[in-house]
Image: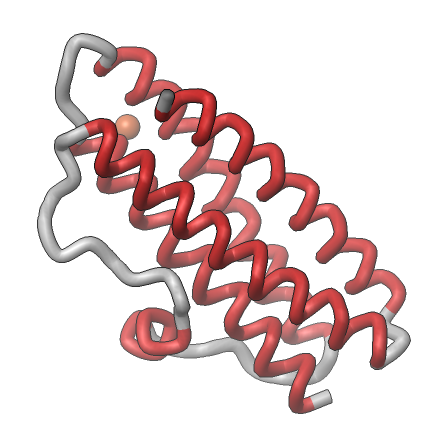
Length: 145
Ligand SMILES: [Fe+2]
């Protein structure tokens, strides 16, 4: 169960840092396609933000605790936070594609740990998250072209 707990904390951290990356990009992106980018990123960050709560509640449902600080979330995340505002669309979308790939790696590890622990409902939830991140990947790559 410790392996599952650790894997779920990684999923939460990657989702959280990817969420904030998308939100700051929503604020800072510039260019002639600003309205479309701003709106696309609005949908993305809201989906990720909503997911953080459900992921955290799954951690509590296996009787473990969630991280309690932003510092722990950031240090646990494979996704790195931005150090400067992301205003260039091409850079921002590349960053998000990379973050999405990292989130998929964490999700697959957590899914395998949940499956090994016979946590059927949690496995199902993680499969759904993998499906959603695959869709995020498609949309991000199509928008970045
Ligand atoms: Fe906004």
